[in-house]
Length: 333
Image (cartoon, rainbow, N blue to C red):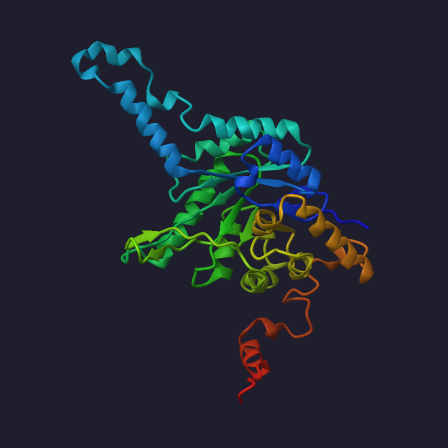
């Protein structure tokens, strides 16, 4: 049985990838992820805010007091001459890339296209086989148009693609008014992969302290519906690879995503809940399902339930809305 798949041009031994999470914060854990069966690991994100903070701090230290001695300004190189940033992240990436045989994908989280793009290149130099852009942007400014938000994503992709030669994926938000059009625009901009979908974490209210508080909840299996829909719709229509990254808790979700058309299936919540070794359960469960249904390879099943391959393509559009409502039978009717 051939479980191999190709994601962004990178050959993987099987489709199940450990997505960005605290589990990748040490070389020991990354080796455990490999031993448990991860076909690749996406590192936890390096945030634009971290890079900007360190850059500002170093610039302050370099220039403090120099107004008293004008000639002393020439003693220090310009800020651009320094490799500013969390060296520990790059060193971890370098060590992990040398310690395991599976691909390590670096992750950058930002909202602009200036001041931090160079770190994509540093990740490549540290051994990253690809870069995942986790563009976490909440357009809270009411004067920002949808088109401006879209252009920001596109500009970031173009800037990163110009800086590196390794493949670049975009972790895409589900909140665009026309997701298909946005996916195509990112594909045209050079994105090598689209990861569907980013889970934006909304704040909660603490009624005891009357403060806005963070509240992280792990995903649930029923969250696969939205990415399942759009992977099925986009399959075969883009050059970029497609990856699924929401609601993967059992082998069932892995199978569904592959049949929709995903090249890779990423999981974090299941591993945080059940432990790193649960990767083996997911991989073996996929293999068992394929054996039971007489599939010889992942390639054979990939996209078999996509919009372009099912008998009724309207099942992914408005007609299915009516069918879904009609399928519900209330006990009180």
